[in-house]
Image (cartoon, rainbow, N blue to C red):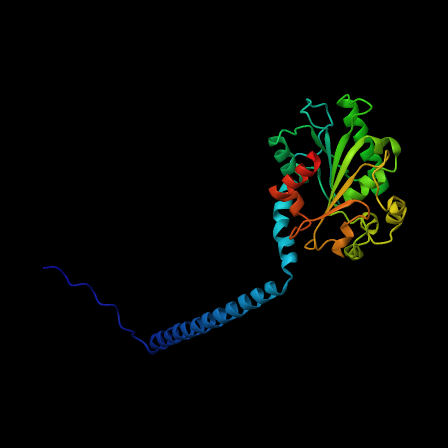
Length: 289
């Protein structure tokens, strides 16, 4: 016959009974504590979530949109850096030079350049300022780039190029145009969110670049002689795109230039010009006109 399984031994001492009772009590206590902790964490999470949502809603919508676009802007920095300003086949359009802004990168225009290429305008270039320390040095570098593009594409004396400049790049472009030879080499300029009159946002930092963008800075006072902007043999037509939603230009009208063609772009942030196909098409159409 099969021997029945042995039963677990009974506690054979008072000490074992005490230990069993102790661990039973500990188990029940942990269960109660865990339940209470769970309720506390759930309540805390709900309160934290509500606070975060309320805080987010309290931020100005234009600021939220600027922040939301930052990851996309970051991706443009992954594109290849400065490329040589080599000769490119004539595509029936003037060569085009893109000029980036403060803390920018030549890759900021990669989307716009690809869009222009699909529209048949492939002779485009993008400047890279690198570690140049001030706007005057950037302007001198831009003059060199203009000369290089013209020379490498074997342009005649009466042939010129276009410039599209974002943010601070528009101020650098205006400085470069102080040189008559450079000015005569430019057919037209389009600025995108450029603080032509300065921006009070530049009060939040004190680097040499940013100080130059403050209203009444030495650089902007120097450029006062260009105002009102008028087309002339030594000054190309200029179109300034600006937006009330651009929170980096304060006041927003600071991106307009007296005497130039100023076009408001409703709901555009400071980065929409670089990221949205609608903006790329607007710039393309302006250059074609």
